[in-house]
Structures are given as structure tokens and as C-alpha cells.
Figure 1 (cartoon, helix red, strand yellow):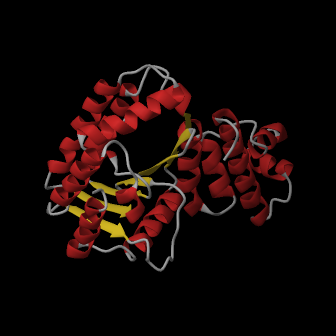
Figure 2: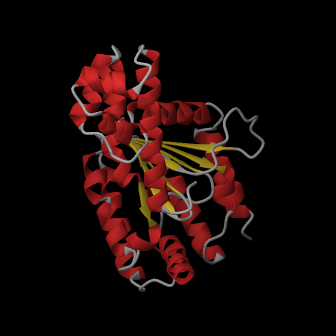
Figure 3: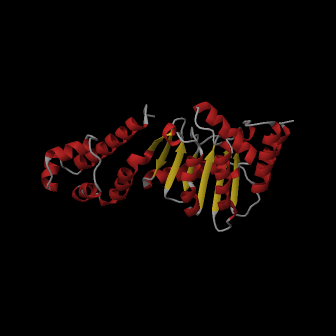
Length: 283
């Protein structure tokens, strides 16, 4: 991960420029000058784009795709360029006014999403959190980052977003590592109530809750949790940044990763048994 969001954006521009350079060379345009002449550009424009100094416009990307005879690359190139400025969002900037604005920012995305696919390795995801569990997590984030304390307001928004979970016309695929059941946030009572809530949610028709046992034979091991919203975008929360991925090829990669993880999870009675064991371990 880059050292800061601004440097990450620059790295992303350079990566896009490098990809365009590869496309250009593979098509037979050995130099940026040759491609620029064909596109009707100055050589400096092509150089700035390929060196990540300038983010290309939609039309610039179309020129690369069409002149290099790879029109199938255009949707991915377009999504990459549109995503560069928003791809890395600094947590400190998001949280400078507290956590409530962070929670509110995702409300429109939740409301328009019909199919949620969620993988969390160490925590219960927000859609399934009880008030006390959410309060415990958010208060720790606020204390750690020393940001304005709006815990109760932020919790209210988070729980308000859970209304989408009651919509039987939506689909929720949720995968949790067994570790997430065992990681304590709050008191034993808080954890017992949270795990009990998981048992209740697990029987909803629109929810597929899978638990990946600690003993599972691993075929996939992502380092961080991720949320897939329909087939449109993926959000990954890192320690210092929120990463948004919209490139179709990368969204597909995360969908494949989710499918692989789903293959080693257990569901129904075996999943509920793991949750019950975690509750018993609290005593």
C-alpha cells in the first residue's frame, strides 16, 4: 500500500499509463510519437498520459482502445480512470468530523444495491451488528484516532442502514471467518447478544450466512474484508484508507474470490453450531 492517499492516486495514474504503454507497444506503435501522430496529438500529450502525469479523458482512452485494435479493453480502462481520484480515501479526512458522515455516505449505495456479498475475517459486519457491539467498535475507533466523539449518532445511522436487510427482494451472501465469532468487542454479554443476533439473522430467507471454520483446508486467504455491491463495485477497508474498486475485471476477481471462500464455508446447522460454540466459550 502506498504511504499516503495522494501518493496512491499518483501510483494509480502511473499504473494506468503503464498499461496504456503496453497496449500501444503490443499493437505495433513502438513509440509514443508514432501513436500521437496517428491520434492527432502532440507527442508530449501521449508522454504525459503514459507517465502518469495526466489522467486521460474518456476520448483519450477510446483512442487507445480503437487505434490499438483492442476495443474490448475500453470498459476496464474507462472504469480505472474514473476510479483513480476516489480509489483511496484517507480515513483521517473521512473522519475529521466524526464517524456519522462516514456512515451516512454509504446510505445511497446500500439503498440501490440488490445483491450484497460480504466477507469479513475478524469482525461482524455492520449490517448484522447489534447496538452494543457497534457502539463498542465505534468508540474504540474514535478513541484510537482521537476524532470527534459522535458515537451514538454514528451507531444510529449504522443501525438505520440495516433496514435493507429486511427487504426480501434483496440477496445477502455473508461469509465470516470463525475468528470473527471469537474476537471480543465489548463485554461477554455484548458478545453473547451479538452472536445470538447472528443466529436469528441466519434463518432469514434472503440471507445466506456462511462460517469458514478455522480448520478449513485453505484455497483462498484474503488479508482484509471486502464488500461487493451488485456487480458494480467493491469496497475494501484498510487500516488507513478505504479502497473502492470499480474496474469490471477486478470486480470479477473479487466475485471469484468470494465464490472460492464460499466453497470452504459451512452453512445451516453446522454454521449455527459454530456460533453456539462461540457463545458457550464466553462463559
